[in-house]
Amino acid sequence: MEMVQTVLLVVLVFFVIVSIHEWGHFFFAKRAGILVREFAIGFGPKLFSVKKGETRYTLRLIPAGGFVRMAGEDPEIVEVQPGQTIAVRLAGDQVTRIYLDRLEERTDVIRGEVETIDLERSLEIVMDVEGVRESYKVHPQAFMVSKGRDTQIAPLDRQFGSKTVGQRALAIFAGPFMNFVLAFVLFMVYIQMVGVPIDPPDKVMIGQIIEGRPAADANLEVGDEIQSINGEAIGGDYERMIALIGASADKLMQWTVLRDGQPINVEITPILDPEAGEGKVGISPSFPMRSASVGETISYAGKAMKNMTELILQGLKKLVLGDFVLDDLGGPVRTAEVTGQIAKQGIAQLTSWTAILSLYLGIFNLLPFPALDGSRLIFIGLEAVRGRPIDPNRESMVHFIGFAMLMLLMLAVTYNDILRLVRG
Image 1 (tube, one colour):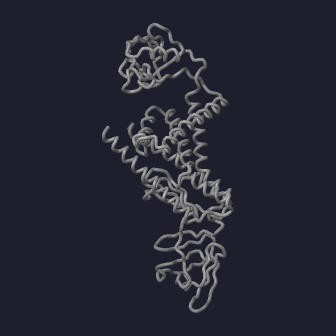
Image 2 (image 1 turned 180 degrees about the horizontal axis):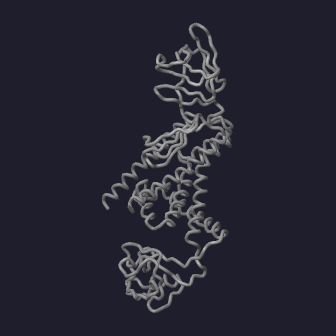
Image 3 (image 1 turned 90 degrees about the vertical axis):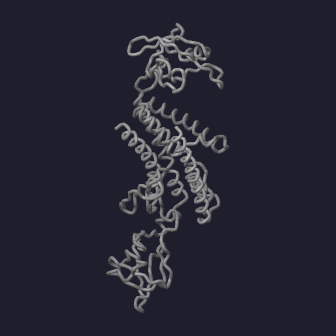
């Protein structure tokens, strides 16, 4: 039962951070009047699909992100050429369906040979119907039907490329921005859950025990209050505790901890950390907490955003400079594994971790790498400077290559994650 609950929580975390990102794109695209054809979570084959209004909402197999497909971003409908025979269905005096195949099976339609057709500007079809030249107005939400697939037409004013630079930039930036908003809100929720440290602290407790270190083999537990080390009272002096441990590498130490109101004596020998040049026992501290005020909640959430942003940027810098090995990278498998481990620690820790993932997703998507939102914003910026857009075909090719490279990297790290799990 616990395993099922953990899996559901992992799925929920991924769903929330990806959905809020894509919702940002979706909401501001709709506000700009852009036709949004699909709102997708995941990539690859469809697992679930439902259409509501003009948009199809899909859940796809590969949980590596999502996308919002806007009209005009890619080739979308089959072009109709003059001389081609088609069938149209009218509602009132406007065309609502344009059929390109299986014409003999269509009922209540008008068949004819196309003379001219414009589905973007004038929304008009001129056909030769049994030797008579007929002109029909096309409804702005008419559908093109071909090979069993209905595709809504997109008049020019409903296409992504027809909107102003500002509207398009906002629709693209809104995805990462919503991740930042979610991260900030979740950090505030976390702070309300756990509170803020009492300053100055009156005691030091064990917040985490690292596996494979001396503390894991000693009779210590998370939540123990460290009262004294080698007979010296610690109180809330965390720095003194660190100094005593650091000076006692490979030396037996006598600790007294308070657990459930009872003092317990513990023997522990710190090991030498070669990098730090001092002793370590493998614990992280925790301090007495109190409820946070509204102002403190906002302030601490802002500090958490700042600190985590700096750490994320440091990691991305190593990635760009090539200062890493493949084992340093983690794909969806490792992220899901870590998320599952944190979910077992409680809802508070999972909330904090979800905030970090959301912040990371927002920052990562703003990188100027092809196929990411940052790259698309650069193309929009170049258009603003040049006064004219980049060739759409060239831009599409750049994004396609970037997407392919990201997928290859994703496959590599996922393969490495699976090997690591198999090897234990």
